[in-house]
Amino acid sequence: MLKSNFSGFSLEAGTDEAGRGCLSGPVVAAAVILHKDFTHAFLNDSKQLSEKKREELRPFIEENAIAFGVSFVWQDEVDEINVLQASITGMHRAIDALNISPEFIIIDGNKFKNYKEIPYETIVKGDAKYLSIAAASVLAKTYRDEYMAKIHKEFPMYNWKKNKGYPTKEHRNAIREFGANIHHRKTFRLLPEQLKLKV
Image (cartoon, rainbow, N blue to C red; front, side, top):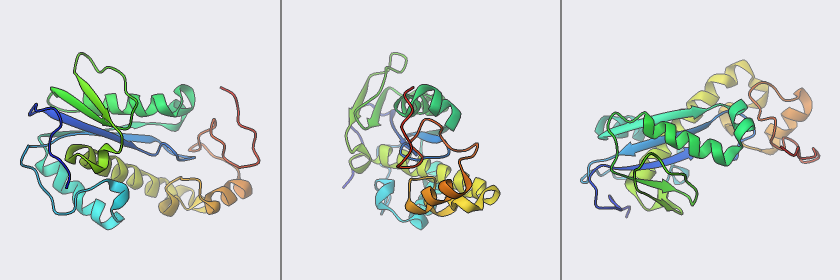
């Protein structure tokens, strides 16, 4: 059973990101503030949910949250600042996008940087422990998947609609055959035989 609150503050924002381990596309982050009595039968860490359930949840979260924000950190910026910084930057921008300022922030994972003067706590596997982080994980994942399906139409050979840019065997075979394109992260090891660039 996921908990509704960590800090005791009523305006507690949960934040999470999607796409860190991908070879292509953006890192997408979301921040969500939920009412303390918010419930949903199957809200959980987005990785535990089917695509269909995530898509059902997204409008429910958006309609019933006190506030939500989503941000995209594009692949060239991921290359420039590295993927960890891109995740933190994305989460900061998602909090920026909230139409109400949180009193406390809870973050999935163990890395974060101060956001203004707002107190925060990092929580490992937080998306499987707290509703607001789980809700943020669903928004981040669905917005990212939607974007990857969109660019799939332009570059169907990589099958991003299915693999979402993750390093599957199929995706890597397509990179081997067709090369990388504008959506690939240049600082990532796109192929196992490729020497990792030092940046």
